[in-house]
Image 1 (cartoon, rainbow, N blue to C red):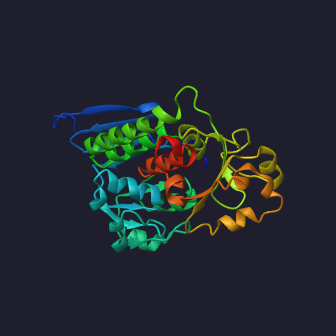
Image 2: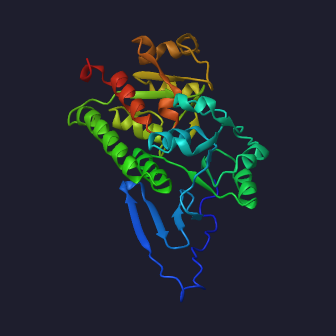
Length: 317
């Protein structure tokens, strides 16, 4: 999604320097292994500068007080770090936490720009699924935006820290990340231990679509103690064929359930020649809530725990 867009220069006007004593607070957060670099500067002018996942440098006149979230992931993160009271608009697919129900909806992939402008936000937060041209149209109207684009669990933790810093909820974000990491460790100490057999896993998040290398779905499979049959495909999110899946012969098939798919066990077992696949023969076909492995907010750790239980039930009986 057009990574490496032109960065804006971080400038604080100093024409009144002789009359104003400027007190600057500089902080750098190297957030875990995800590679975020959050850079902030506070002065009398109240300028805050930070960098998003597209490498764009964004400058705000103080911490935002009115935020519009145009994707489910930032919505969840904002509430999870304690900044839910700042959210004045959300996309049509944001359904968690329950508090979002009464918040103004602003569209989804096609944003209602008029509604967004009417909410008078001082920041838009998006995932990398929203077309950039719509975000740029809002920026042209004077509303800055940032993009979150996680790929691994480390990225998720970094994203949470970024949102916490932007909203002046760094302490809440740190506490949340620490608790999530503890839960990850509790899973991986079992599933990634020496000698643990890794069954072959096929996750279908939409008919014949799966997680390839570099995606957080792939990351989750590995952390949960499985072997992703699509690990050597050519894209993060990829389509595959019946022939490929039959040849890979997964031991476990996991399909997602949610607003984007109506897949059932019968759909899978009735596919031609799939009755020869180990997972079908041994009745190891399971469903999982799509939101838990397709959104890269805090609940992705719920998804990891659910996957681990499906892949290695012997550890969680």
